[in-house]
Image 1 (cartoon, rainbow, N blue to C red):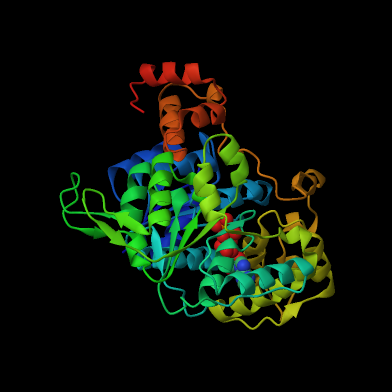
Image 2 (tube, helix red, strand yellow):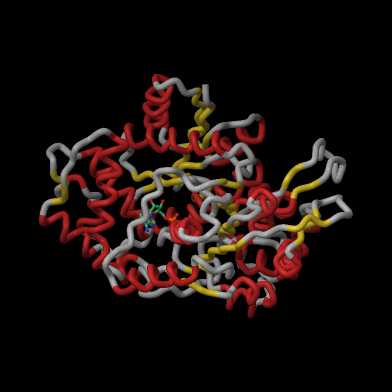
Length: 459
Ligand SMILES: Nc1ncnc2c1ncn2[C@@H]1O[C@H](COP(=O)(O)OP(=O)(O)OP(=O)(O)O)[C@@H](O)[C@H]1O
């Protein structure tokens, strides 16, 4: 029976959800605060964490970083209200598996839990996803922006050039990467995807390059790296901006010399791998801040594709909505045929800060709630039907890289033990880049160094 950790500060809600999940054959442990949840997580392994996005003692982003300190692989599902959805969407790029919106729908929750557990089972190492799944259905869209992406894919796919795909979270970067692979000569060779955002500094090198038995404590057997696993095919590096400087150096070497060296080995192995990298941030800015190596950037940037936010390609919204409707019908065994006129207007006019992922989730939820064969306003989240003016206005009008706003947190509001944990979690997230950590914690470097000493943190 899979073990689920449920964190929510509402005891009645916890009890209801726990009872429901236990009936579905899950072991559930509950915690009413983030602190309590983290303590449980530290003490025992869980297969999944289901947590409220706003807890009395932490917000979801902060909690997510701390969960990652204790477990880099446990899937985390966030339960959020629509008011927090932009932040929740950002949490996805920090490695949350999925978000579901409150009020919780039991069927949707169950479906999301099943998918998360299935994905975890398919990726025992937690990091790499090999192969393109059989039901990969790429929708192109009718807008000029979609046509441009399609043209670029057709142009670039047959070559061996490295590609950077840049765009907001949920705009379909990984889908573009898979499409490039499937349209390339390498289509019958492996496609391996790695989420660099979910890899700790130590793990990244061994995951990418592998290690030999005895290279370090715990290296009990030889391990093949994902470079080798992708041999002849394509390696998709998601959230490339999160790789530590050291790993960037190793990656550059692998790309330039077409050779990798396992950790602890003295010999090189030749590799023939095409690299596609994706990023939510503007790598040029990361280069100018000294956080991303310029030489690696140029090596990867043989071609760049920008995925357009959905609000700038409104022509495509209904085509995607119809596609997600058919997918949901299949998954949920329903037979909803379409959207009524009012619902269509609302979908076309909403700003979709979470892009295609948000649209997919809204459609899936509406299909679950549908009482007739058409989706009406009743099934759409009220926040979409009548978005708060500030909410829409807050959506950026174009893709501009804000300097890690999703991570930024003010250390000055934390005290004692939680301050220590916050610093540790932040260091982990930014791969021990202290300048970056200080900036995101809103303190200066000197203060950070003082605190590292004060809390006995070696970084
Ligand atoms: N071209 C497409 N056709 C059909 N569905 C798509 C397409 N692009 C994206 N989607 C849907 O949107 C979801 C999010 O897309 P994807 O994971 O590729 O986005 P992303 O930009 O890589 O997001 P992130 O930066 O958060 O990792 C996909 O799981 C898929 O359901």
